[in-house]
Amino acid sequence: SFVNGNEIFNAARKGHYAVGAFNTNNMEWTRAILKGAQEKNTPVLIQVSMGAAKYMGDYRVVKTLVEEEMHAMNITVPVILHLDHGNFEAAKECIEVGFSSVMFDGSDLPFEENLAKTKEIVELAHAKGVSVEAEVGSIGGEEDGIIGAGELADVEEAKAIAATGVDYLACGIGNIHGPYPDNWKGLSFDRLEELANAIAVPLVLHGGSGIPQDQIEKAIKMGVSKVNINTECQIAFAEATREYIEAGKDREGKGYDPRKLLAPGTQAITDTVTSMIDWLGTPAVK
Ligand code: G3H
Ligand code: ZN
Image (cartoon, rainbow, N blue to C red; front, side, top):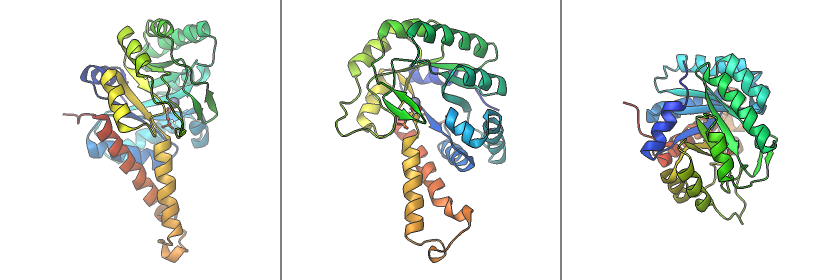
């Protein structure tokens, strides 16, 4: 069964390390992430976007798949099952269905509405032992149809959202979903410092793919405890799959067994997960 994120991420904030949050899309992705975390013997957060859940069927399918794969694979590390960038309805549904954590992303709403709805989700979620992530400011770029302007999080707004009792908080600090453009100015450490000084809840860094390692490490030292990684796994999967097929490695380029065709890409996801866990400094469970 799943654990919620409260204790794990609070321990991470206090210990100045982070725990990886990896997006799943299907069975291969789910297995690859679980395998990577089990190899490193670290806690892991598996998250699903609204779009990916729709692709897989519905939230119940996601929950059942992750749960049953954990069982079949003899997974012993703590696993958090989380909704990524959910709207109000999706967050409510995931709380009902048995996710152990949800993100309510009200960053596109007027602030007062974001605040009120975050509060409502926190009440519903905490009544069931489910942890909650909210968002202040916004993440630039696009992920699965969620488009953000990329404004830096306002410190007063972040304080108000933190006071609702959220378990972790995503803040815009110059981070962007998807690959970073060549002219990217880097993370805003000034704003991150102000936010980290103002609020005690673990901070979440979205857009974790493509940030230079030294910036990720600095952000973690300052209070980032959850790092979201999606694009990095997608690129690794796509490159390994393309390479395997284009090099004609499967039966001289005539292979058709899906289990063979998907294997190199799946392994590439596991390799990405284990190397990200090393970057984040997630300690092994005892
Ligand atoms: O919510 C998911 C993450 O913020 C992923 O961002 O695709 O840039 O790694 P990324
Ligand atoms: Zn995100």
